Image (cartoon, rainbow, N blue to C red; front, side, top):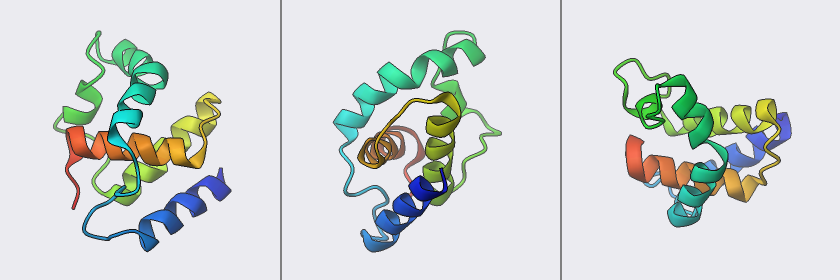
Length: 101
């Protein structure tokens, strides 16, 4: 887990600071999100998994927090995603919901 967070932190730090997850592929991340994330989120929000990202009291407030949250979900749920998968998820979530700069 710690290794994944370090890798993502490095990727974020070496990438363009103006565009978090710039090296990720949002389209691929969207497919991963549908396969690996949306079902759990939908269960928690009465069928609308997007509410986890759009609710007023959302927990993620920065690109770094988003990267950490993705890594935590991956580790805790045993999703076995590779670091590039996590980066793709970050690109999708940032493009679709968060819009971090």
